[in-house]
Length: 315
Image (cartoon, rainbow, N blue to C red; front, side, top):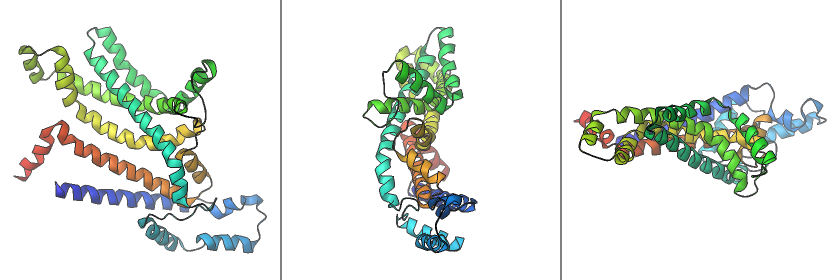
């Protein structure tokens, strides 16, 4: 177990370094530079002395490897410097925006679990074939709908026509519901599709037939035996979706005009604000690594054979 954790920790360090380096190279390769954007681009009235002073302040004029080395050394201490565009401390900027995004992501994850598991269980539990096929078609429909289109549709129908929930802004819990549903619909469709297929396979297994022959009730077979044993593939996809939802929030927060990490990221990318973009990329990679690690550690709890198999191979 210790070797497994050490290997996973080394993989996590590599992923964080790769995310930091790739984001730096991509931003550095762009034709414009953040100082030009800050000073007004082609319409700038700044003198050459003013431009040189700003470039020296943020180290933009140094060679690429020198800039990269300084940025990496500071990032290892958790210091991403100051925003080139606003001058604000990057950690403070991220810290102010992150809570709103985390609340949105947490509610979207809850909706994803409820919808995904609910559709899969209802589809595999239905006795009538027509109802089962109808429920099984829902995930494919959910996956095919673009998130921004779902968001605009919800705003038009729920907010403007029904006036049931606010369309824009960060005013209370009600303003979280529509963007969370927008994020959860495609994610829950993936979970439902994987879980329904896995449950169908498990319900056709010989040990399920044995349980039926012993008189075990249908509900107990379905929820206790089949759902638990079929949840491993769904847990894998759910872990990946959980990390992806944080990046999905960038688009959704823009559609719903929410003040959060999405707005900060969109402005930073548009203005080529390298310190802010790198901090967001590293944060997203860190979330992905942590969620993947937690997902892997949950496997043995759901299926003890996962923990036993490595021990047998080692023996």
